[in-house]
Image (cartoon, rainbow over all chains, first blue to last red; front, side, top):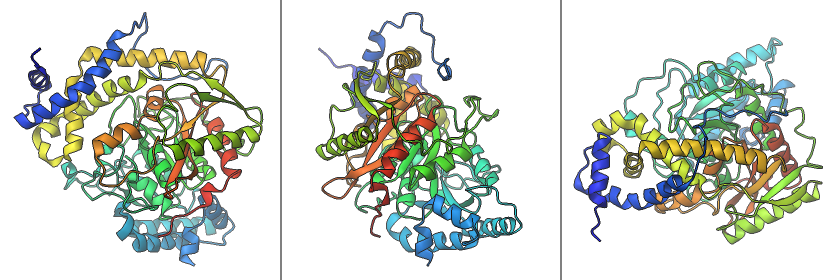
Length: 62
Length: 464
């Protein structure tokens, strides 16, 4: 299976406004392995009706 | 004499000042002399503000002599991590990116509170560049060195904060903690480090790493010292959007109340999976000490523990890139290569990942509230899986291991303290992490104080 992760990394960096030289695109490609693991965890979960966190509050019984 | 003074705990020095046995000028001179003696080996300070410190000490001495004693920080020399603004001093963030930065025009909120308490600012402390790393090894000013072995990393990112307190250069220091950056250097340098609840200490006037995860807190030689500093700097700040308006309360009042009846949870997942043998043994003994003091210990499965680090990354990295975006485009070569790499990695997360991570945080907070802190008052873990790594170890590789047990707690926003609990066979400090419910710094500090007073680890000092 062809590995398109270097192009993925370059495209993502460009979308973020970063024009990376080839050696840095390669480094970013290597980092994508870790990122993919993290985002897989995040995208597999069913969050139900949970809203993004705001600020923390103490226990109501305090 | 000066060495003796610098070796006091903050509480001992405060008592001596209050009773007018020692003047703030003597204390400040003692610290400045000690800094001069050990800095060539430790490199904890980026800037020593000797002149303004001596002036502030003279003013404090005059106030105290005039009967205007403000409290336990009055006339006590402290130092701050150099991402916190101190008026009149440049904030370098330990980066070439900020070379030539103008002096800060206003104190950060924590600096203001310390000043209001009468503390003496000795200077600005070294750190991992822009607080974006856990070893402390990457600084434009060279790394701070661990007083327990100068070939060892201090841990970071508050590297100078941990090293300066361990070396006796100041009585306490302020650090910041986004993934463990107070607790990790505290653990690796053999001192106490408190990360309060998210929002407890204002972030105003601090260079951000990640708005959702940044915390400020003290590092000190004892739990009592950390509590004194925490008490002074905690509280609502209307100028910080994330600042909590929950009352702080008096953490000193119950500090000596002990742990009898306290329910301690011992994680049976994630936190004990990969501990170094010396660390596991020391933490096991520490838990036995707390049990012997009258607390009850039981197993707890911490909800979502395996998933929390992914959410930390999906929040921290994009937020860091967002803050640094302009300078990264304009001055990329001025960043340390590893820090630059972490920033660029922030581009690989999509908006949907970031939002899901914030939702996971909300889900996890609810789960820990109902499944953990309804049954337990405190969770006990190691602070780091390993002791201080060699200073020349791979920064990226080592960092992932160092932050593993601390960064989930940043996502949850819980208060946590690292307290010394032993040494490895190589003589390197080990830290014990106690985690409490939101806004219960009093419980965390009380448990840590009880443990500390039952052991001798906090009294050990490195030979310099």
